Amino acid sequence: MRVLVIGSGGREHALCWALAASPLLAKLWCAPGNAGTAEFAENLPIGALDFSSLVQFAVENAVDLVLPGPEAPLVAGIADAMGAAGIACCGPSAAAARIEGSKSFTKEICDAAGIPTALWERFDDAHAAREFVRRRGAPIVVKADGLAAGKGVVVATSVAEAEEAIAAFMDRDALGEAGRSVVIEECLEGEEVSLFALCDGVTALPLGAAQDHKRVGEGDTGPNTGGMGAYSPPPALSPALAEAAMARIVRPALAELARQGTPFRGILFAGLMMTADGPKLIEFNARFGDPECQAVLLRLQSDLLPALLAACNGDLAQFSLRWRDEVAIAVVMAARGYPGDPVKGTGIRGLECAAAMPGVTVFQAATQRLNGRLVAAGGRVLTVCATGPDLQAARDAAYQAVAAIDWPEGFCRRDIGWRALGAG
Ligand code: AMP
Ligand code: GLY
Image (cartoon, rainbow, N blue to C red; front, side):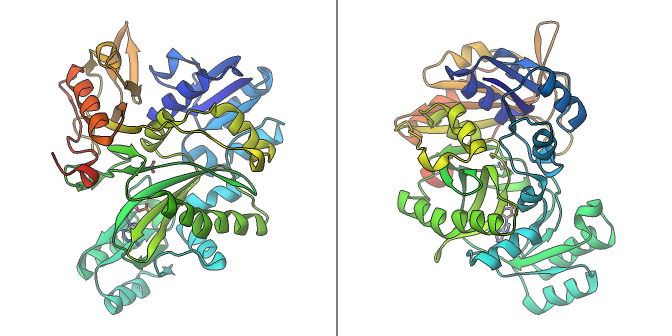
């Protein structure tokens, strides 16, 4: 099999790492990739949104499978572009990826399929949105309807804060088109869990779960990020609750998408709130989470590649996956300044030493090699991962590996796993 992974983050490094272990793999490319993916794949100097170059490359090089990592190419239609050229792509069409690209689309799917989620309403008019917020009171959640790279959600603890979010999104166009309409919803309480399912349009196969840490600061404080760390499996999602979430949330959504003529193929990410009334849907994403993917894949015992092919071919009903009986943790190291303006170009040393520690795997995200030197080239730069018999052991191993990395301009949260272990 000749496989092309699209993207350049820690998630894509982990996907390349997992695919490289497959006996079915003949050749692996990553576009554009990073210094870590270069260990397993040939990096291509093609951007994730340069569809004409990606399709041309896939056709000319007889690529058997394309695996897009991030949402942007999916929402923009990479699966449609590859499909039109006869190339298999393990990702949803643009129409099905609206489940990530539009909050109101997702909410309509939930209502049509009876999926438990926060009560909601959509507004195109800022005045009506403000009225609604005043009537409902706080806490309340204001969301830009479109894709906003994690900056489009405000969980407001006061009416004033909610009104400020409406003003920023709708009056001041802070997010451009994405914020011209908003979804306002009930604030749910509980622990958040990310549940993944590999889908072939009809069948959904559980693909692990993890708990993410979205805020930059310890104790889940400070601005939102793409994710500062994760662990899998999450104790908050027992096997029984995971099955309940598959039955009440994931499978009904898949069935509704198929009924609407936009079947979902690829990795469906259900962001769940574990409320006192059971799991409720916060959001769907059309892809793996980052850094959840890194933690989940470390536990996957089965070969990932045939599962992805089965998803493309509609064969998942015959499929099952095996998992290691271990806990995995992922600690993100980011460049100082993230999630604002990260310092770039600083040197990183000691990765080999960290990666040689028992149970440790280091995935790279925004890294580059310049004259043989590894340098940071963005916000989230490394995902330092470890597995162990329990979360404490995995966490200890991961932080020992962090200590072995010599990168003064990098930082990480010291409390990944705190909800399960305590801040220790
Ligand atoms: P989203 O982009 O929809 O995942 O929202 C980003 C974050 O905002 C989520 O991970 C939650 O922490 C929080 N959030 C979103 N919707 C709600 C809600 N209805 N109630 C409470 N928190 C929410
Ligand atoms: N870590 C959350 C996400 O990938 O959206």
